[in-house]
Amino acid sequence: MLKTIIVGASGYTGAELALFIARHPELELSGLYVSENSLDKGKSIAELYGKLLGVVDMTLEPLGVNDIANVCEGIDVVVLATAHEVSHDLAPHFLAANTTVFDLSGAFRVNDLAFYEKFYGFTHQYPELLEKAVYGLAEWNGGAVKATDLIAVPGCYTTTSLLALKPLQQAGLIKEGIKPTINATSGVSGAGRKASTTSSFCEVSLHPYGVFNHRHKPEIDTHLGTPVVFTPHLGSYKRGILASINVVLKEGVTPEQVSAVFEQAYQDQPIVRLLKGTYPAVKNVEGTPFCDIAWAQDGEDLIVFSATDNLLKGASSQAMQCINLKFGFPMTLSLL
Ligand SMILES: NC(=O)c1ccc[n+]([C@@H]2O[C@H](COP(=O)([O-])OP(=O)(O)OC[C@H]3O[C@@H](n4cnc5c(N)ncnc54)[C@H](OP(=O)(O)O)[C@@H]3O)[C@@H](O)[C@H]2O)c1
Image 1: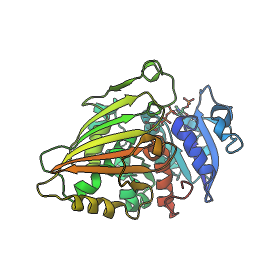
Image 2: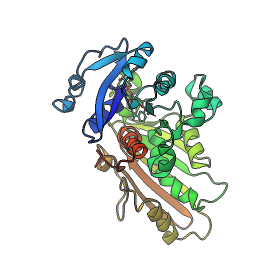
Image 3: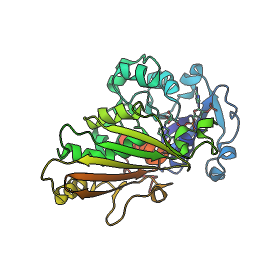
Image 4: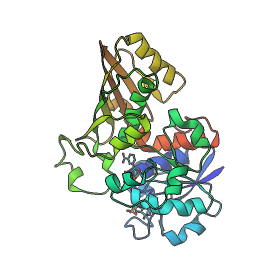
């Protein structure tokens, strides 16, 4: 059994992971941590998330940087379900304690120091970790995930968009010089559990935000290998992302070719479901680890639709897939 701890366990993604890890036959959930001064330290996680009652009844323990060496004794796997700056500061300590780190934040997703200054507002101190970190887009980077001890789990909009675009990009079907245009809407849990007026029920309706400056745009560009136009929207519902992506195809690309590249990419990937005769809907992926994809073509115009649960395929279940890949377990273990 691999002893596994979650840092940031009281947050939305951390709590989802606690459930996956607790029911995983090869992992032992060995600790749930929050910050040193957390208001939730000492509480059972089931006090915060009633659905975990009788399933994960562990206490949330406070964690300071100086505790890490002790906490890591005998620990194999650490999941950081923490804010970007927190993951940035904590990951080197956990790596120094010989654990394998799966980070849900953006702190190690793009190997470019300037990216962190510009889009995250902090100076990245660990270029050598950016060099070693592997981007955990599970269906595409499985081999590389096996070979590292620092896995940067992709962002939620990014996962939803990349899974839809990568088959077309890799097959060279996208017309050169015309950027794919992604319009995506997320539920409010994308902003985490902390109270804030921008994510308060009475304030949210349906509106764009982060126009031309959202941090997932350069993350998508980097891991797709070509620039996109990306507009995120906030919707007044809890969880789930739907992306509608306009792509101009190269002249002469047929519907059969488009179908073939999607089939080829995902025929052996049970987490990505290619829909026929219907389109993805948030309600069908909510609470599931799936990414649902469908498309429609009119001549050279293609619209690809992609839906995920931002907390699951967009974060925690993808982290679980990465843990499975890293340690040689079936990729869907504990998920399906
Ligand atoms: N929400 C999503 O849909 C989503 C999707 C993909 C990726 N992500 C990323 O995943 C990470 C977690 O997101 P989330 O939505 O779960 O956030 P969240 O709900 O705000 O939870 C953050 C957690 O971190 C804890 N924490 C804060 N400072 C800490 C510290 N110094 N040491 C240990 N624990 C600390 C918090 O508890 P206390 O403050 O009580 O200590 C809380 O448990 C973020 O980087 C986010 O960008 C989120």
